[in-house]
Image (cartoon, rainbow, N blue to C red; front, side, top):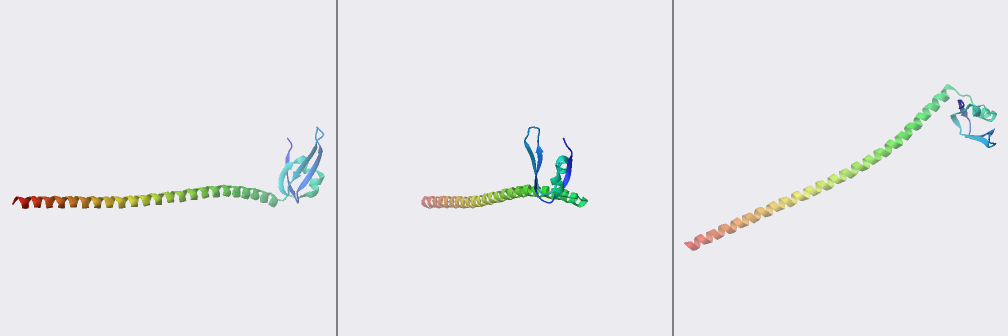
Length: 140
């Protein structure tokens, strides 16, 4: 395992590192910007020609950029969770409104049934009173 070195490239590079033990061409694609590479790659003349000197600001900026990228990834995940929670809240609120409406409708039906029962009971008591009065009148 070779040592890794931090480099700062001014542009993306495709670096030819020769051939491996099997005779296959070894090449590496490097992106522009701050990155860690194997020392063999960093010491390549072509890479050295396109590298900038790394300053403390460059290191801090790279670290801050990695933290920002991680924070943005976390933000995307949290936004998705928030959207899912909002959708669930809307669904539950709708369900509550439907249940509240059903309860109101049932209360109205119960009230009407109680009124109907009261009217029916009143009518029966009136009929019974009228029948009793009629019996009493016939008896006299």
